[in-house]
Image (tube, rainbow, N blue to C red):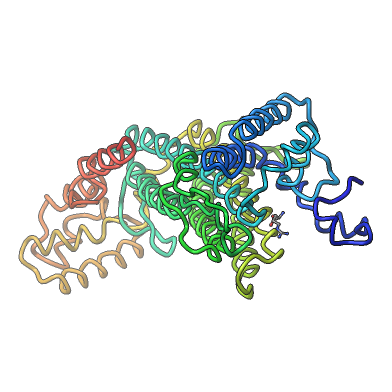
Length: 459
Ligand code: ARG
């Protein structure tokens, strides 16, 4: 095992088990690009400020870029014995440059270095997640545009309630996902603040220029308290929260797809490429993807919980507990990206079965509200109309008919107000097409939602 960079104070080598226990390289190596990017900015600033010699700063930057290239191209492997990615890169630089390499860590600590690297890494991940969410919204919008007049039952308590369209139903998810993008944007804003220059916890005596590093790395602001700079992990927790809510949305959508492709509903059919069979039951076509998305939602909630619990008892500033942040937030990010990239093509290839939706809508008296509204429009107070319609529904159930097939004579027995035009008023198409209120299921109202969503997506 190579000697530790901090070996000076110690009279023995660290126990091997402790070394493994302490090491984070197995999971933080993925930040190598960010670590090097941060070091290049730091070295640039050190040279410009005359804290190290300008020529040496250039040599360091060149050396760092070569390391990056060697890792990218597989010429340099991570050393599993290295304590973490920061130590690995610095040790490699020193191997290559000797004394010059040792100057990089001037006016810096791993505490502000790691805080910087995670921010740089997650900034990029947020962009990737957002791009996937936008793609999903695009697929939903296309699905909605094709199904503006696909009548289906709307549910409350999973009981048929009022008629809507499939377009209206899926567009609800587009709205939810737009809010997810908003939350990711908010998270990004608070994440995009520079911690480097906080050093170990108490800043530094060197004349560093944090504004310059901020500019070089594209941050909006500099963190103005060095203790906060190294001990803040709010941005991980915020991102895990935003991802948890996004997963919750995907999970609800998944649950509906599980229901919709059951024989009891049969509103949709999944493409064969996005469903799986059973090892014993030949007839089965299972919606495993959606079940896994639903299941993995719990796992992401677990990541959020890990982060919240890990932070709650920590005194300021850095504590090693915080090394545990990475596996949790990386898992949340990886999981949501994996779910989105499988869910999107599944939804894109899913076949909608409008006939079955319509048949389901035709049962269950989902036009009962419209029947009551018919009476109200002819002058009856709503409560009286409600009661008459309730009695009509009970009569239909008794006679084994629907409101559409009940004879006018039967209607008239309950109220003389009923005329032939009741049949038009309670037809499914009328029920849906007349719900033109803003945000409602009528095609023109859904078109308005679609335009709004499209505008937000492009804006
Ligand atoms: N690997 C460490 C982490 O992820 C880096 C910071 C170590 N700092 C320290 N003072 N030991 O948190």
